[in-house]
Image 1: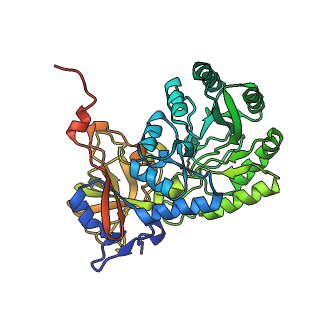
Image 2: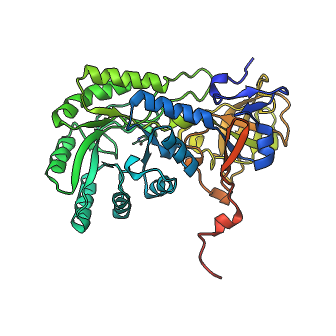
Image 3: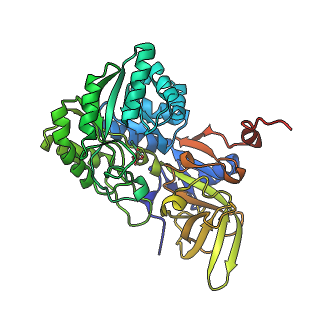
Length: 425
Ligand SMILES: Cc1ncc(COP(=O)(O)O)c(C=O)c1O
């Protein structure tokens, strides 16, 4: 028997009287009818509980990494549940501000922030700018000469710790585009330069070792490596970044946010770090909160080889399989506890053979054209990393809670595709 494991579904998931999936008290078959497919369905209470867990584990200052999934409703929700917000571009900054999150509670990231982005962040009064390079220090000093404002900064340090995860999401190693290398002395030079600069006020240090890290021990390692430098520099804050992993497929286990927080707290205590310690979880807040609903459009059998099941989305609403080879489960949301005894290839509708969502997708027998098919754990780095390839309309997003659904991002239309196209005939 291969039934979809319960732990991969959002917290409020239940099985209805007809075997269908209910999330937040809403029948997902009805959501698909009402809002169309593909559709991202987020369990709002699950999101709120994870934000609260992070705020409890790390205290004030812990920031939600909005790159995982952002819209105004998400920004407001994270703020309401006590989190700060990490934004990594002028666009993410604009959405967070449009959601009325106080700028003081924003942390601004990026390895190549433009002068315009830095200007916007300083003008808004963001709480912290995480400086990534000497060029960025030059820019902040230039802007200071323009308007006299002093930016409150953390310096992003590359500790030289290799977290075992996909190389594209591994960021703490020496050979990285991010941050000031600890071993090569850049970190020390950046501290000295910041202290001597009238354009910035050095508040703390930051490190992010990677994403989808399953072993909390890598954070202990990073803290051990960073501790002498943090203590010697006498800064008052240390952010350990984000990165704790989540289970995506059957058999995977990941530490909870609370467990991660405890590992980090103890490691900092052992290392004698007195700076206030915070973190920036993204994936662990949103990934398991959502499922994506698709409708099956074509089924093709290649005798002796495989069955292709094509849905109405594809790698534009979830690029992770194509980018990183990430694994996902599949299930039929109309019969969520059915034995998934058939293996098919779940593909999208793009003009690319690489448009594969799940190469070996387990589904119950009898799946037909017109049925729904769903992928769980799709709340992080799916819609936010999506694109408009083939000019598909990006999907809608609904938040569900207590039997109510609210549309937080509507489906795109042809008019959205044309609104930036300004050339006349
Ligand atoms: C600087 C920084 N902080 C936080 C995060 C969030 O990581 P995660 O979603 O794995 O928790 C990232 C992700 O890339 C990041 O680059």
